[in-house]
Length: 409
Ligand code: IMO
Ligand code: MG
Image (cartoon, rainbow, N blue to C red; front, top):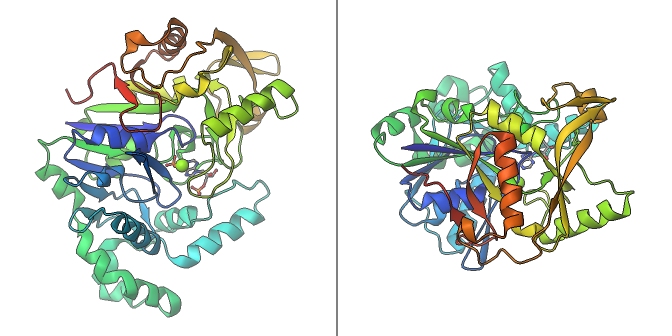
């Protein structure tokens, strides 16, 4: 069975934790989009791991992981990450593979990325990891893939620092290189988990363009990015937090307003208890009310079979919770997610109030044991999005999670 896990917001939804949790029943984990711009945090037995390029399944000793064709790979950062795993007692050798169709980020792309963003009239606030440059080179048809590393004519086109860099990593990359389509066919009867990076709203096509990343972080990206066709994807899960966050620039209609005392206090609480600081750049994340207009769009544009709700416990102390059910754009009430940047920038959230549960959810492992107020919040989300919430996470640890709807069947 093949299950896809995507982010249903602007990234940082807790995908790493959920992939790690679901990976227990998968034999292989394949990451399909982005590169070192991602930051997936996993906590196991109190120990925290921050993964950027290596799929989250790596923490299980018996799993093999694949970096897919839809990714852009920074070899230097990748081998540093693998070394970090080794230093923490995780033996990765022989179980990390990379698609021969994946593209390579050259070191100079990082500077080009930062310079280009600084020169933009409306900077995106990229992570500066060279992501956009690598995907642009790919689209220009001037990129370099792992498959090209032993193509003598192509390699002869590189000189200076580029050549030295590629020479340094060439043999190691070749030793990890695979034909992912052949592998996916070979493993067609196994459980395979496809790990998304970024999120629905950061997808190059369906996201809040131009304030997006450059890869296909949508569900369809699992197919194009992993060498299989869309028919082979059995289930698609979308992870979202009980509130909204965003890193970098671009419209975010439900962002807490810093000049409003109550919202500014709410922002502080959510940011601190939710640890809303970037794993990749350390930037404080922008925080806001859950945006159901955006979430329902994410469900539709990605054919989500079910939702995974994380960080529900962050609302434990709240008297009242609010979520956005429509946008007010210049007096017009809108519930379909707009493509226009100006519409998005002018959108004022129409908020619905929910009663808080004012108790800790940390030890709850069954849906029916959730306080009624929490169930009301979840069930409203399900009705609004016309999509069930199948998994709920109430803490950072692997086991602080419970399933309502089985995934691998
Ligand atoms: P994970 O997988 C949150 C954002 C950046 C920036 C925009 C473009 O951890 O959820 P890029 O460097 O990709 O060109 O930056 O996308 N961004 C993310 N935000 N989580 C991520 O990944 C992100 N990857 C990119 O902040 O606004
Ligand atoms: Mg992140």
